[in-house]
Length: 281
Image (tube, rainbow, N blue to C red; front, top):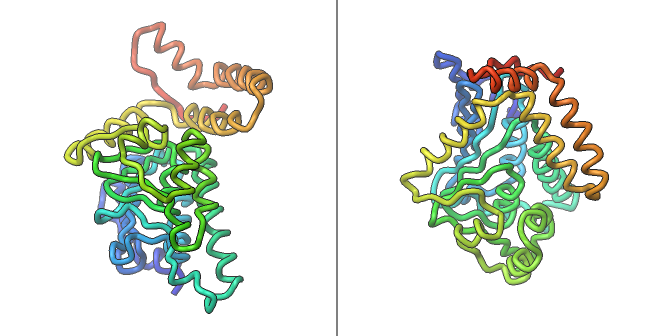
C-alpha cells in the first residue's frame, strides 16, 4: 500500500475540523485545526531518521493543499528531532538509482518549504543532526529548547554533509558553518541562536507556549500578505541590493493596493481590528 493510499484509508475526522492521520499507516502524526497543521516525526526507534519513506510522507503531509492553512509546525517524538538520513538504505546493495531518489526527494522537500505560502515552524526539543539539521535550517522559524543541539557530523562516517550544508551556510556565518561541517562537532541551542540558525531558545516547559505565541502572531495577519512577503523574502536573498530594492518597491506597491493592504491601512487609521479577506488581489 502506498502512503497516499494509506492516508486515504487512515484519515478520520474527530470534529471541529480536527483531522488526524492514522499512526499505523505512516511514520508521522498529523493533525490540523483552525488553520494550523501539526506534523510530528514519530519514528523514535530510528531516531526519526529521514528514510525515503519518511521523506515521502513528510513531502505529502507538508505540501498537501489546503486553502485554509495558515502555518505548519514540525515537531518530533523523543529526544532526537532527527538524526538525518537512514544510512542503512545508503549502502552499495541499495544501488545508485535508489540513492539518487533519496536525495532527489529530500531536495524537493527542502526547496518546497521555502515555496510554501505559509510559514513553517520547527519546534525542536533534542538533537538535530545531518539532514535533520538541514530540515531545521530549511524551516522559516525555529523554536528550540535549551537542551537541543545541532550538528552536521557526516564526515565522521565518510559521508560529508554536502546537502545539509546548503541551507546551513545560508543561515549562519561562514566561519560557524565551516566549523560545523568540517569538524562535525555539535553546537548548543544558545550558539545556534547567536549564529542565526535558531529564532528562539526557551526552557523545555515553555516550548509549547512560545510556539503558540508565534502561531497566534501569524494567525492575526492576512494569509495573502504573509504569502506575498515570504515569497519575496526568499527571492531577494539571491538578488543584488539594487535589483532587490527595485523589485521590492514593486512588491510594496502591489501589497498596498491589495484589498488586505487597504484594509490594514484603514483599520490602523480607524483604530480598529482589521477584517482580512485573505484574497491575493
